[in-house]
Amino acid sequence: MKYNHFFISKIIIALVLTLTTVFAAAKAAAPVAAPVVAKSTKDTPLTDAQKFYGTELKSSKKVVHPPYAWGDCTVCHKDAKGEKGLVMDPPELCAMCHEAKDGKKFIHGPVAAGACTSCHNPHESDNAKLLVASSINELCVSCHQDKDEFLRKTANIHPPVKDQCTNCHDPHTEDHLFQLKADGKKDLCVMCHVEKEVWTKTVTDKHGALNRPRKCLECHDPHGSSNPKFLIKDTSKELCLTCHSQPVTTDETGEKLMDIGKHLENNPDWHGPILWGDCAACHNPHGSNNLRMLNKPFPRTFYEAFDEDNYICFQCHEKEKIMDEKTSTATNFRNGDVNMHFIHVNKEKGRSCRACHDFHGTKEYPHHLRAKTQFGKINFPIRFIESENGGSCAPACHARRHYDKVTPKVNLK
Image (spheres, rainbow, N blue to C red):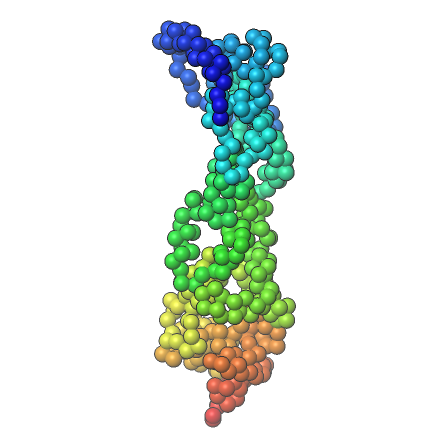
């Protein structure tokens, strides 16, 4: 940029003329107080905007633009009274003194249009930075009215947003879309959520959603939401089904996962967490070190030595269902007082719960019993038949065997 030497010399002269007055008054002048929060008085009640957005930029003393303080209007205007227009248009006029604010890839609209005075008062202001509003957010929503409406009606506002928009956005220019201080899909998020960055990189079972085009924004609204965790859907179930209502292939192993949406539609007897709409009751949406991103451990194989600490099921279901060898109360899956869960699960070669139960939903049998179970490449039917006090099944594991909690059955095969 070529600087106008005439105007620069005028600025220097004005500075010299005022330095003597400034230094002479320095000892007597009171120190400039830090910005204070405005308080309502009988004569000056706070506006609705001030009540909602705060007044953190309110200054205890009027902030005066130096050229205006000097009383030399010709620094910016064509005549001494400031009545004949500007010597040049902003932002070039402002850039005579201030560093240019339009040097990066994405430029804020008012900056690109040279409308510096949309946000800054060129003469004096009651607010820091000569801003025309007493809080950053009040200033931003004076144009971004959709965000004003959003902030006023949203129950859960992201703390950086509630504090001030400039925590994430540069008000002038940045190299990222929307003048964000880093890529808004993930990089910006992990500037604060460092623990999520570490977690997602180190867990063994990773969530493929984090690699989708919008990354964190696939699930979360960065400004806020009426839902917990700033989710973009009412429940975690609704959110999960935006992807899992079709077959999904895992990024890590290439394993094909079932279409859960279709499965739930065809199997309306849903497991409790599904009824609650809470997939996150069992799964960690950011990934985990457990099978299928479960919040707690669960056996990875069909057969596995029983370990009570290796079952997420026990966060809801009583351990006695599996651990009591004999019982008359812990479970109805018993032959007399012989606990059939104990026999199947609690041993060195124990079957995991999913050998017989579907954790999402079923249709044909009670107790979320599967119609078929998979063992290796074989998908065989359980063939369960319920009776008044028990039932029987005939899977590929064994011939049909019966149990009855009142009159114990004797199975010869």
